[in-house]
Image (tube, rainbow over all chains, first blue to last red; front, side):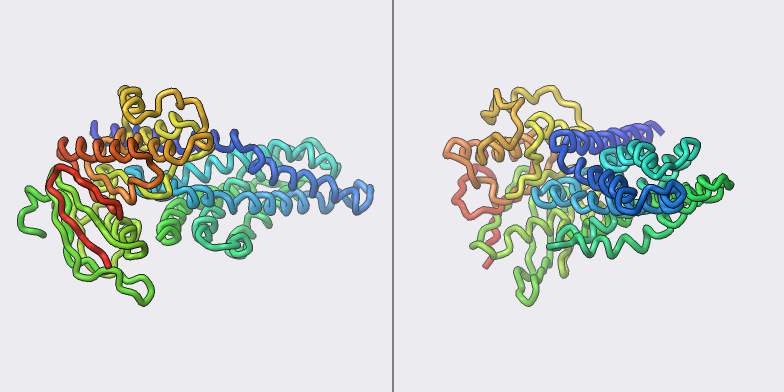
Length: 232
Length: 209
């Protein structure tokens, strides 16, 4: 029993160490994290300017635009998830570390979400105002985006792992991930639309939460397997 | 299972690896006990790195078995990884982080708490560079950081791919010295190099063509 406790605390220490490292790296190179956020902000602010100021119309497609932009911004950031580790040999060290690889890639995906997904969620109410989304919907918007971007970071880590050794893997990454990301987009945007219309939203939130749990629990194993193949 | 597993730490038999059409090595075997070194020699492109990667488990072999402490490495990855440290030409260090941050990460992943960092850094000539990002260090100094990680890892098996690259004469002597020290402590080293190396320890050689 004591041994088990020992190894559990080791696992948590490993997870914390890898998250800490990636956050530190993001802090020292803020450009990589800021780019997708800029993209998100630009799409969401330019859209209303291009289409017209009718509040009714904006409200109709607002949730869809917010969600599509969030999906694309997350995809944009995913390509680099394992790339620098692959290039400088850190990936070898991670694969050969005594910690289980799925745990380490879970840590990397979580750190990635903290750097790109979380700021995106925090920005979203501000951008939603440009679509005149009512303030009582902001809670649902942020909740669904939290679950959605976390799912996308997890799913995306599988694609990033599969394409890490390839030149121009970015296009392939999108192709691999988009079909899996469709449920997130459909349920996310629809749930926000329902909230705008004043309808019940719990079903959509539950589905997104279930999908999020599914990806968090299973994708690290797929990612670890993919990384080992890509790194051969 | 090999006959004398008590004395042998790392052993292999019947290793074969193809890269594309080309056979890099075939029917390769070795056995190393505590304090022994394996020297892998050969020209560029002869498969030295591939052999090391195969021993580490980064590359899957076409056939053959590798044992670490009498256990098949493929089935006991965790046990091997806990005992092994890996040094290659891609150092696996983060150039945006400082030396200490890099070393601390490795220690955390290995579950180590150490307080003799300073002594090791001193020995490797890295004193006073702790606060600089690795990017600001010279190629030789970066390599010394990778060596420091190796020394601090407490691993029993060292896999070293071209450990002398980028190092000055003093640095090359240092590599020799830390390898000798490791072997004296009962470690096992597998070194791939095209440099001449004289180490006062039992050494097996594999020449790849």
